[in-house]
Image 1 (cartoon, rainbow, N blue to C red):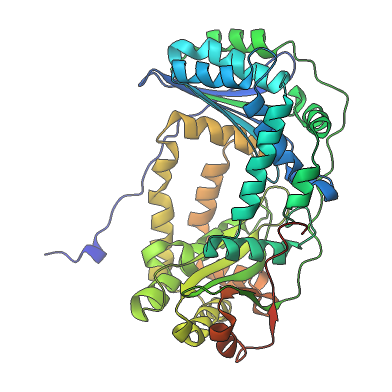
Image 2: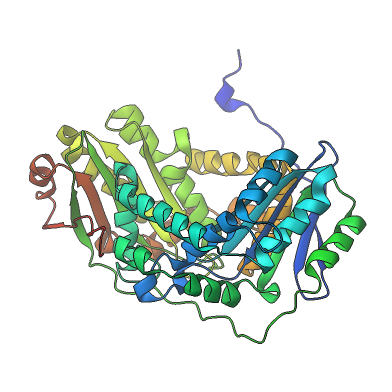
Length: 452
């Protein structure tokens, strides 16, 4: 029998589908992919907005505004009536606000597409913001704030984000109950007028439709939405990060939850491709990665251990290692994890692990094109992020061209053991003795949910 490790396969040839790009008369960009395999249509639209633009004393205003837009419906159809019509058509409309974008998504049977577009346009252009739905939005926001710290893994991720971006930075701050209670309907209306504008919109449509008919309907419902003269708000820079070191978030839980890392690169950085390959070797390559093979398989110290180098389009992203381990094994897991970071800076990776990482990335490429929606949405997101339309294929070629010498070079340039922020969520009585062997331990308590 042939050793499966010695099997050789030809390089996967991918001929990706492409979205067609169109521009409505008012400047709205549309990326469309026809796919008649099922009688359904997925829709989405991005706006250049985000919670990073919330006033310092109104963190959460953006996400609350997005929620209230959908809950309240529009002048064409109030929220409750909109819910009923969505149910009767088997359709959906949802809104959301992230750090750096506002988005609206829809799904419908193809025969209902014109009506779906009409209702989506009405929510975008003329949201009603009825007082009772504003209050419902406030209650939902307060509930989310109350439950934000229930999950230890989420606690670790949130506290790590606050630490690396700065607790008061627009990229790291969190809204409080006091701020949610202070948000007014007038503030929501003003914010909607400021960010929901056709000149900042990029739309995605994928599914069973005829492109010519789609564009006629979009012109009918959105084409007369006039752009305004406003200048987009500048993107705020991160600032106020906590100093490198060990931070303990006190929680009486069964094991320690860990996040280790620091700020990394922006998406268009020239070292992006070799860093992506490095990440696969270290901990983003699932069963083949160093962290998984050592920390989980060999030592049995954790069920889940991973790394993520996540560049961002507008500001530096993050390098993060995540793990959960028993208190009794903390003093073994931590130096083992840090040792892998240092080793990547000290010597070249082995040929076989580089090949495995490249193969995993290359062979997974086909799944990026398995649906019309993924193709169309990616085209819109690339344009939104200022990336070329063929970014995915460029990234593929860049990763495959990277060498183990490149991995060593970018490890030395972008992995900084002396700048690591180490966040541990766990019982202080069980964590602190082990952590103090590695340096000074500072407490990073969960912020006051009522005021900050």
